[in-house]
Amino acid sequence: MTEYYDDLETRSADQREAALFSTLPDLIAHAQAKASGWAKHLDGVDPKSVADRAGLAKLPVFRKSMMGELQKANPPFGGFATIPVEDFTRIFMSPGPIWEPQRAGTDPWNGARPLFAAGFRKGDLVHNSLAYHMTPGGFIYDTAFLELGCTLFPAGIGNTEMQVAAISALKPSGYAGTPDYLKVIMDHASEAGLDISSLKRASVGGGALPESLRAWYGEHGVAATQTYATAELGVIAFETEALEGMVINENYIVEIVKPGTGDLVVDSDVGEMVVTILDRTYPLIRFATGDLTAILPGDSPCGRTNMRIKGWMGRADQRTKVKGMFIDPAQINDIAKRHPEFSKLRLVVDRANDQDVMVLKAECANANDDMAEKLAASVQAICKVRGDVEIVEIGSLPNDGKVIADERSYE
Image (cartoon, rainbow, N blue to C red; front, top):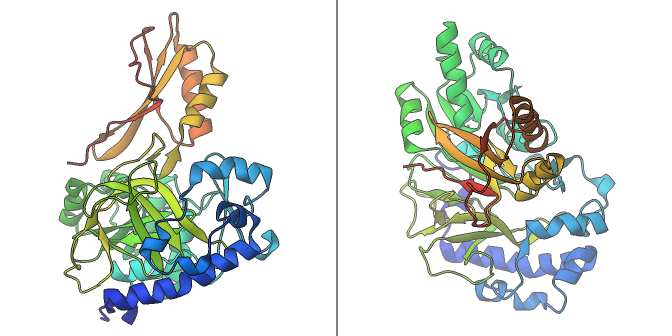
């Protein structure tokens, strides 16, 4: 079995930096010339000055939170695409709403390399349970697996009984989806007496994979590794067989900054991940992900030489991801507008039985079961994720400004 996807993975750090920063100035000039949003955001920037990391660090950070209003003013992409909308093949939606295009190419989210590192090869049959509806999750994996020459069963989300039946009948060797949902599938198969032991490896994303859950999968014959991806940027980093941090994907420039700023942190300090992707159709330059991580020193024992990060370590803001879907404070505020009978809302996210769970706590003086059911229905409708509702006394929720409290622990 070939050890690496290509020679790019084992080049020296100096070779990689030279290649990245020989491309970046021209990309910036192209973005300024072809995209009005970038021309305004990078007004006064001389592309030739961005020839190394020191030059890049002087550019302003671009945050996803800025995109909503910019896209409303200049639909659909806020002036940050360099080609007309009709030249993109697909458009996706994130909470906000935020519109994201599918970039050109057969592997537009750069997922083939990470999946190769996870052990997938040409001829594998893979069960893909990420969403194909509105969001790009399913397509991120789908296009990458096809690039590798794999065969896909596009399961999408939900319909667990049918998914288990499909795995039992088709006997795929691989799984792609959120970390939690594979356990749901395996538990359901066990209860139904169906054999899905054909599954031998899994690539999971859209949430953290606790070591306890990884070990459980291993005990049941499935080797699970993680990818770190976003709808805008594609697959930024991935685990390898070494299971020591996540290796940055090729053709991405990753910086770690103090949350809410563009200032670089000291090496190994936790900060917010800022990413630059070298794509000429929808370039993103110093794009702040809102996710916390830290750089791991040294190279991976697997032999890949790119920078490593510790993986996802939480959110730099209150926006959080639950079961693969981002939930934004604005969505909780939309729920509050639908239900003025509740004086205060607070979404609490936690873990139970190796799965994400969320509870919307709502202050109300005279609530009843019908009000709680309607509130739960609004959570499902607006957040696209099921959650419980807990009615609490007036004044019992903390006065700390939090709309979303992420209390998950992965120890």
